[in-house]
Length: 277
Length: 292
Ligand SMILES: Nc1ncnc2c1ncn2[C@@H]1O[C@H](COP(=O)(O)OP(=O)(O)OP(=O)(O)O)[C@@H](O)[C@H]1O
Ligand SMILES: Nc1ncnc2c1ncn2[C@@H]1O[C@H](COP(=O)(O)OP(=O)(O)OP(=O)(O)O)[C@@H](O)[C@H]1O
Ligand SMILES: [Mg+2]
Ligand SMILES: [Mg+2]
Image 1 (cartoon, rainbow over the protein chains, first blue to last red):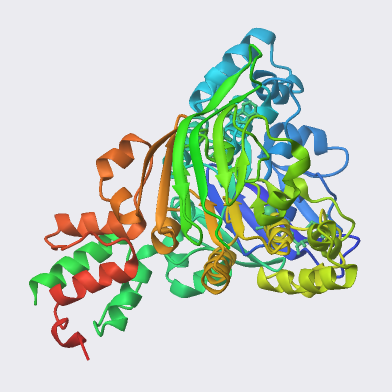
Image 2: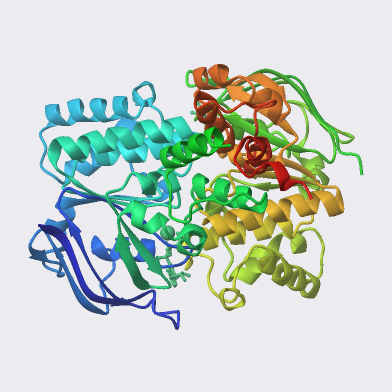
């Protein structure tokens, strides 16, 4: 079942002459982890802001959990959708880390005890429990991102939108947090939309949506998309390592398979090729 | 222009002297040679941003000394004397978007040079050139810097620092949020500035591939201490140590370890895809006649 349905969506910023979102239609299925990719300025954040009703589309229709997004329904819809913004400083409101994580629950009629439990649990999940009495402004970049993520983990809304929410985390920290969110998603059958330039994160998604200059380009599985090889750079993603290795081997006059191989696949191919020498 | 950088017994505490004091740097001793490319790595909260903010005296050591060229910074240093240092050391902050403030993108980039005495006309010229260098479309120059995408804002912030034409360029995760093309462009630009103009580069990054591809010296921070320093090859030669400190390997190195399991042999563990291919090509069928 589609939990998000976007039909012929259009949006232009008033001070710009180009469409930031240009006739975009797409569907997101309940329980999917969907990566949204595209080069800088392609319209990813704009789409996300339209989905939570931060701005109203010029035309087109957004349906979330069977409810059409309108000025009347926007508050109800925001109870179902939580978003972590690209720059965490734009979203801190609490005087302490704990207040900040609690804030999102205050509008969601959660009782005080449950709230405290959930705040502590969420902070623990992102490794920030020791910092709960600190001021959010006085944290390191990665710590700020962790706290922003704790805010959404505490709420566990039906739909999580992460706008480059892990871009400042160290590689292991990023993996760990994505796992936490994956687990939460699996446990509660949540839907995750994650805007990212990280190839590994995109590789772990169920589906990938590609946006280019406000247009919807394609929606596919990671392995279908990675077949595009070097073209992935146009789509705002890096070239996967196996493709880079194949290219480098080709430059050294070694014939390599044309179709996309993941790392496992390339190891197998190389192993065989070595034995056949 | 010799701008060697030296830290001697540097300690730093935020909110020093209050119950909320946090010691973010502990007895740091290090040297960064003029004209080198130094990468600073380490997990979340390890003190990287705190460390580099000492390079233009935005933070002053709680104790110890930082020397940049002929300027010595201690706890006592008076802010009045710091203007030349701020011109010499250009700093791209971790969330540089938060520093944008002018009415238009052009004015924002041109602000720095004008502040240091460059005429408006020259500063605008410089700003246009730098905007081009970081891949900002001309059509964006007259826009408010706040009406941009995240990646576009980041490019504006980087262009603004480049326009200062600093001798030391300090970048705090400059490519987070940039698309891969932007990331490559910025890294190549930085490398070119270093090669052509002898800039000293200090880069904080979580991208081990960038460390392997561009840096010649690496500082590893952990819990406010300098845990280790050396060449990328030295740092990446000990995977267990890296894992224990929550750090990773360059992707080519990680892949080489997998190939080792599959029977490949490596004389030295490769750090880059090109080194990897050099090592495995001769071990493959049709690899023999590869040398022209
Ligand atoms: N407030 C605004 N006013 C005018 N134009 C804007 C505004 N915000 C964004 N834009 C423009 O709309 C387009 C889409 O921006 P958006 O922020 O959605 O991109 P994005 O895909 O999220 O990019 P990034 O990867 O850099 O974050 C860009 O060309 C941008 O310049
Ligand atoms: N303004 C501040 N006031 C108090 N403590 C701070 C402040 N800024 C940073 N800290 C603390 O100092 C320590 C080092 O922070 P720093 O920003 O240098 O880390 P970092 O290595 O840059 O991390 P990241 O990769 O997350 O950006 C952290 O524990 C952080 O919470
Ligand atoms: Mg964006
Ligand atoms: Mg930092």
